[in-house]
Image (tube, rainbow, N blue to C red):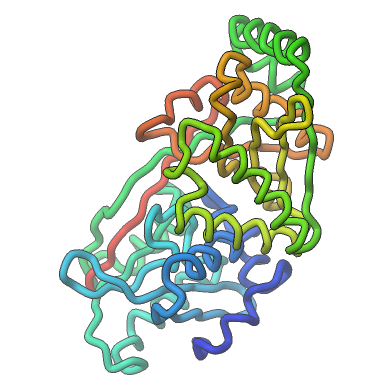
Length: 329
């Protein structure tokens, strides 16, 4: 079944089939397969771009029409980073195969390129796609990434036991300096869009005082994307925000969202005036302490490769390879 575009709102709910099957599908970055990521991207970047969602009781495939170079392609709704998988559930490959065969008849479009994103290159989906499509069409690599993660098994003590002695020492020293400087931490889990907006406004106030200023979350697309995401997460109570304050002033934040027992970090920032207080590390530590208290099992930090990603190496011990492929029929 391929939905009429007007039916997208039926998927935009915490317990929709889309979100349930995303939670059940093994993949390197499961949070980014949720509607909280995919539909928030569409809302912020591509509100009028054509898309299709195909589903049955055991799977879902979602695609939007965009361009690869000069050629049209069908790929995931979130087309910028290609983090979340867009072929979900045990029936996902069946639905993709149906789409590949029927799309020209559905739309009259001559598109013959299909992007499958966010896969484990050695996982079940990748193996199934090779089995079904090798020999029928060309399969090429579009993008590869490595996602970093940290186990939270054993709680905060378990997490810290997997860090180096110098890491633990620096963290203790940073905690002492911040406490002496009057830094305090607040934990927020928005439960309504209004609460999400209020917390987000405080986060933006910090961003404007940070080195990122207008190139961070206060940028037009980023602001719209993360606003929409935090609002959607408020419906499932899966947003997690820690704010750092000093003398009644917001000076730092970290936020992300849950998918089951897995937390996916999104953004953190702190005021330039507090650069000497190690707030980035302390915000991470406070978030991990909270997650462990709630029984979370893994902290996904996002991509390890790229600019400004070096800090993640000391916080993560798990590397999850990820690939996105193009099927050219």
